[in-house]
Length: 333
Image (cartoon, rainbow, N blue to C red; front, side, top):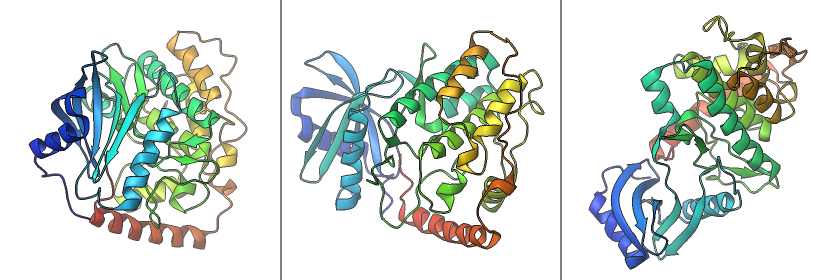
């Protein structure tokens, strides 16, 4: 698939004007990836700023990509929650396709961590609790995000978090919102079962959330290194202790994240509701100590019901898929 990063911004503005006419005043481009560009616009009728996500021209000719894009709009439109970016509408005509959504005046969580490093525990807990609330809302409605990471969390100027980019989400009814034949996601955050092509459930989002939480609390990833080292870490290596990096964190938080990062989905917490309870305690300065016990289900590799041969094959296949996906420009916005 062609690299569309250099498509002229004015050309994209013209496509948006053809789609929306005087309904929206297109102000400026906010950013883009391999699949879509996002513009800041002004809704004249409702007198509010909005973000408009436009599918790039070179990919809009592929029917499966267009279907994935429009399915994202339908999926997120059904998720009305204060910590999920709201979809206001969609416009599709000929080879131009756009989603109109809430504009979050702020930055991404990965930019916050890149600038500040490890966040103060109470601030980190508050942001992560809000993300957990948004994800749990999606899970309760049968939607798995499948690409939870700091880049897909927006933080506004008041410090509120919003889950964004459900572009590769999946419904638990089996409707997959991805390009067939490829495993999509982000290698630094992807769960072991997602890497080996197993059925993806809310537990996969919980794992990715755990990786993100580790990074927000410590300023580093649990499994850094080369692509091969990252994969091996997520598949075979127990996550390091948060308290080894940030000693002031409580055993409760350490145990909470450790269980999220269990290799076997059945060893993780039943839902992210448990995470919210513990994170809220930390954010509000409540340290009762009642939960400061390492859970019985720990992320031991031996509980993972996958043979070494299966893991090896899975890693090889996924490395090949990653190379192919990179070459085709499928890792989009």
